[in-house]
Structure formats: structure tokens, C-alpha cells
Length: 291
Length: 168
Ligand SMILES: Cc1cc2nc3c(=O)[nH]c(=O)nc-3n(C[C@H](O)[C@H](O)[C@H](O)COP(=O)(O)OP(=O)(O)OC[C@H]3O[C@@H](n4cnc5c(N)ncnc54)[C@H](O)[C@@H]3O)c2cc1C
Ligand code: FES
Ligand code: FES
Image (cartoon, rainbow over the protein chains, first blue to last red):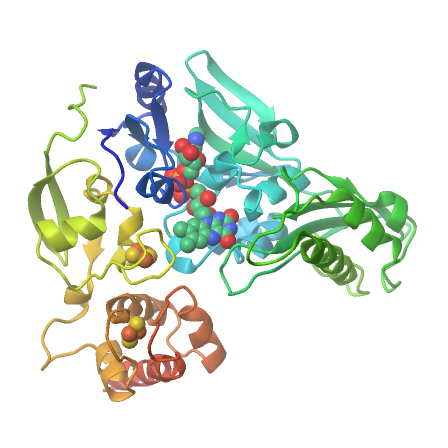
């Protein structure tokens, strides 16, 4: 259970980090918080020759809240984002989801951007990125580019990032006024990866009726793509019960796998029920969770 | 940047319990092994080596973190506190250590250093937890012996001891 030998690079700037990745010629990996990568190295599921450690790169640890988004730098730890009150006010879904990411001792080192770059379908923050219409800011040898979250996740642990590109920040989109969000998951122990989880965003229009409703999932889809529930929920009013059609729509959308913790059927049922409850939470009559 | 060849020993200096400590180790040396093997600080225990059990939990800049999920080279830029730094004198134990002893919150003691560091950091931010909050606070640490009941009691007792100390 020890990592294979590698050369450690400690760049001070993004340009130096990119240069180190380019020099590694495809045999390099970015090391952020290490909370996913180091277990993979220790189990020898990965053995890159070069690790480019972002820990000392200046300027990547900032959180910016604007009218349209919350921009999270690559070195912002899950714990720091969870604790950030302005970010939680601007986009309540961030804190709602981050509470479910691992344990405090993992959140203190693990980065939110790293968990998106890692693209684990069992991760919470990829689902939040897709639901909020996030934009991934990447820098590579050819300069900077932006990738919509919907185009970023290519498959389990697979993204459309090039091997010599670094994600410098993710801009999570803020929802329009009148949007209520909720996040629910079920796991065997608090802090464990979820058997299934869901993030929902329901926008109630000026007429008091549901205008849009969307969901994205944790642990039950290969990539966290959006499920549009507008057809099932459109026109409902806060206080109305969640229609049964939601369960069918979710069951048809998700594609879970069986493992020692739960069967695929159980996970599908769980995803549908969690979605029903999450939507119920957004449809209570008080105006809570507005983003 | 000129980088050394893979696995070449590096001079690594980490501030542990307030003291800069230097040893020679390759870049792939985990902080947990650096503490135990290179610095002889065997208070930090190693169980699963993939972040799950919590036995190796130390404080990095005051926050609980897994020593098995950090490289010693990275730790050079941070201040590390191990269970020895929480208290290494049986005659002058910290409130958390005293509470664990008083409440029989350990049997074999393998998991204990990770609980002590985790709970020490937790109580700094949450000085007066409820039993449910105490349970949540230790949910990232595994104990194969005690059944956790006495550990939950110890968290609450440690909070009492800390408050008594602060009030005294
Ligand atoms: C016991 C345990 C339980 C956990 N439970 C959960 C959980 O319930 N939910 C959850 O979501 N996560 C969980 N995690 C993982 C945790 O959230 C990680 O922090 C996160 O997945 C990765 O972030 P990191 O900063 O640690 O990235 P690293 O581990 O450093 O990197 C992960 C991968 O992403 C790449 N990468 C990281 N940052 C960048 C970047 N800026 N640019 C390009 N590539 C990058 C790396 O090259 C690597 O391939 C758990 C981890 C452990 C050990
Ligand atoms: S040894 Fe580090 S968490 Fe188990
Ligand atoms: S006391 Fe033995 S593992 Fe906890």
C-alpha cells in the first residue's frame, strides 16, 4: 500500500504547473488535495511518473461571489467553501451538498474543484456543477479555455480535459430568482459515498406556479446529466403534492449498478424516492431555500 | 524547474508539534510514514492507508486531516500536530485524553490517537456539543473494540473538562 516512485513538482504559478505537465509528456498528474488521488496511488491503480502539486500555487484559493455565479478556485477546500456564508447565501445548494461530501477530516484537505476534475459519478459536486450550469475554467499550453459542465464529464472518472491542462476554477451558476433547491442522499454511514443522491432545482414563477424543475444525480448515473422534470411538475404550486410521475421519470433516467452495498433495483427505487422527497422540500409553502 | 529523479531521497523538513524536523525520504513518503519511520513519532497509527479508518488523523494547520493522504513533501508548507503534540505526559494529559481515560473510551487503543486529534479539533470549534453532534463528530473514525458508546461519552466529558478549565 505505498505509491510507486514519482518526481514531485512544486510549482508556484499556474504557468509553471502547466509547464511541468507538458514536460512530463502525458506521464504527469495534478495533485490537489490528494484525497482521491493518493488512495489510487497507494493501491497502485495509478502510477504516474510525475506529480504536479498545486498546494503551493499562489492565487488558487479564492471564492468570488457575483450576481451570476460563485467562482471557486482550484485550491479551495470543501471545508472552506462549506463555511463561506456569502457563497451559501448566493447558492444554497453548495452548502446543502458539501455537508454530504465525506467527513470533516477529508473535507479539510480535499478540494471542490478536484472532486469535479476527478469526475467520480459517486461525487456530490459534479452533480451540483451540472445542475447549476457551471463553467470549468482550464489552462493548458495553448492558453485558457472554458468548458460547460455539461460537456466536461465524459464518463466515470473521465473528463474532456487534456492531460496537460489544469482546472484553475469552477464557476457555479446562480439560479434565477424564485428558484428553490434541495439536496438529499442516502449512505450507510454519515460521510460515506452515497448509495444514491439527488440535487433538485425548482423555479417558481411570478404567477406562483412551477416554471422549471430539474434534477441531477449522485451514484446512479455514469455522468451527472440533467433530468428535466418540467413536464411532470410544471404548473404545480407550493403546497401541492409531488406527482407520482416523478418516480417513473427518475427510474427511466438513472442507470445504477449493483455492488456489495446495494442492488441496482434498490438504488433506482432509492433515487426515485429521494427525488420525491427533495422536490417535496422545495414545494413547501414557505419561501425557503430560494437562490 | 529542475526536479530530482524519481525516488531520490530529499531533505524534507516538516514542522511537527511546533518544532521543525528534518529527515531524508523520497517524494512518495506519506506523511504518516514520515512521522512514524523517519521521525520516530509512533503515536500516529496507520490502519487502512486509504483515508477510511481515521487512525492516522493529525492536525494540519489546526484542522484534522489524514496523514496517510498527504505526502511529507507537501506537509513542508504546513504545521502538523500529532497526538504527541496534544499531550505526551501521562501526568499532564489534555482534557480530551483525560476524558478518554475516565470514560473507558478505548480498549486496544489502536484507534485512539485518531479520535483524540479529531475530537481535539472538533471541540475547539464546537465547545458544547449534544450527544448527536458528538456522534456525528466521530463518524469518520473507526473503532473495532468499544462499540462507540463510551467514545461518545468521552467527547461530552472532554467538552465539560475544557469548559471547566476555561472557567477556572
Ligand atoms: C474516506 C473518503 C471518503 C470520501 N467520500 C467522498 C464523498 O462522500 N463524496 C465525494 O464527492 N468525495 C468523497 N471523497 C473524495 C474527496 O471529495 C476528494 O477531495 C475529491 O474527490 C478530490 O479532490 P482532491 O482535491 O483531493 O483531488 P486529488 O485527489 O488531488 O485529485 C483527484 C483527481 O483530480 C485531478 N485533479 C485535481 N485537481 C485538479 C485540477 N485543478 N486540475 C486538473 N486536474 C485535477 C487529479 O489529477 C486526480 O486525477 C472521499 C475521500 C475519502 C478518502
Ligand atoms: S490509515 Fe489513514 S485513514 Fe486509515
Ligand atoms: S479501542 Fe481498539 S480499535 Fe478502538
